[in-house]
Length: 446
Image (cartoon, rainbow, N blue to C red; front, side, top):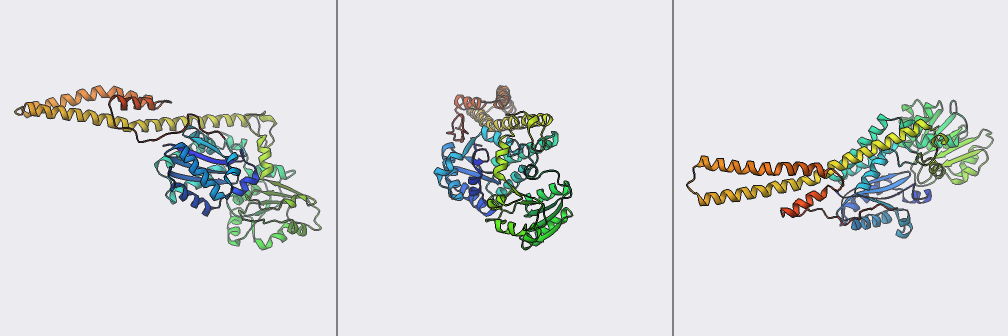
């Protein structure tokens, strides 16, 4: 396996660019198939979320794989390569594994520790599986990352350290608590469900609005909320206190004139949280009297100040993160690091398995050759004596090979352990490895 990650996220790119590169399901599937059709890519998975776009690929060559994936990202996002390149990062082999495990644990999210990325990563894997663009390399890697991510949330209190984007956004948009407030959720997808759950748990009176009324009714029923079609948006805006919009539509859903008209004569303030990418809400909405608009750009700017590894966690004000939560983050980092070490150790062991097999096959060839010579020299040898001689030869070879092969498997699990397999290939003139790796010792510069 030579895994490569090429992508951009809130850490490297402005929200305006992330909006331009956001891919819908159909475009992501097209990117998957085009990726595995490239000369240097054998497997591919695409992770497209509200704050990142990444391609995971199993490649035959590092430089060729980077060139293939980068060109595809530019083509499918319709962003000029020169405009895209400054914001792209690459991770290769061990650094790619570290990046994926950190991501699955919520450590690379806009709000550190959020669990939504696990579902997004699982969905990306299922899509790649359904499209048959992943095989033994990426499938096993992502599955292991998901298991480590689940462990991180099960064994630590990271959830209290990291509110979801919904929770973090509401903390910025709304003054005071949400109990008794009228809340409007626009969109019935995964983020809309999360918003409905957060608002309901906080005691808000929730209404779900969606272009497909049936989807709105289904989501509303899950939380004892009320549902309405998108044609009722203006009516609902007139009586609501909080709006969370997350439709995934291609254009603006809430324009300034609609909001201004709906709020005419309404004196209570309106908080609008736009979690869509591209954005659902016209930025001019934020200039209307009595309206506070918070979007992903504001969340990204705030998240930059919430790096628990860089600031005093007691000073962080996203979801009341405290020093105990910082300890949870450190625990998750250790879990992620342990997961990476275990995965790489197992992978290195698997890599030397062909060498062990080749060595034993070479030994068997030598034994068979010597037995053939024995048969030619002593054609009248008693069969029982011949069998005993053959068994003795095989036992001798097995004893000679046992300790070196056991030691090689153990050493291969360590960093740089591949050198021992390479040495055996040279010493015993075994068939050359088939893996081609022209990658740098340290890949992954942004």
